[in-house]
Length: 399
Image (tube, rainbow, N blue to C red):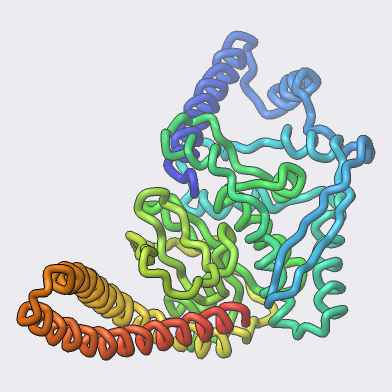
């Protein structure tokens, strides 16, 4: 969930405010008879004395331990980070609106998002967190590519801020971007917030990274540099969804039309005749690639493509099997109901001593029972085949 249009509106307002301020300076200069640079500089120096300077990075105070727990490849992971209320307040008070003079720069989006990736040299939160994730990965004997996957799984596990997303869609104009530190402190964020956190971690780990912005879809994702032939949009970067768990690097998820949220990849359950396994999905539209940087390459996409291909085939197979199962189940249920009706007739004919009708009904019953056994055998075979696909699917999404 992004706020490009909302923030652009704010930017325009700031530009107008700056124009007013510029006009005011010009008016004062005219009133005071200022005509030369030598006269303007002292006047500006006097004005600067009354301007509040950017606050310095604070002393670390009011510590709070944040515990992050998530799962990767079927293994549970956990990290504890000590954060500080004073630092959180510092980032809360940082400028979150992009200001410019006269003409909006052509690269304003790059400049804007870069604002949220700047941190004070005294703040070692991102370096410490990146080191912690790498140490955790090495402890579990993960490869470098798998550590990138682990890092994405970590960011995905941070809860999605549904309330903020709702306000953005309602266009209240009151929501702002969060710095990565704020996301860690609040342990929540929308797509742009979490993508910036993932971007900061990837860059700290030495990987090339970028941001994929989908303005028409109100969505943003992070991307990691990967082999050109395997990259998303042939961009040299692989898409990475940060908002929902289970989505793999290089695979663009489907989006639920009603919630506008990426679909979380979950394990499937065995076939249940009463279940509904369908979603109304949409795909992402035009992309803008922001803040592209070079660094280490993520090569895990090659294996992921093989897994994704196998998963896609299984999904197709299950999509074909599901309506067949429903049809077969309907046939079997109909035959079972018919047998129950004939059984009732047999009981009545037997009680009335009507041998002819009893024998005719008995023959019909036996023929239908034979058909039911065959249809039930086909149905059970289809159920087993479907459940085998489910087991393969669940095994693949764990990889």
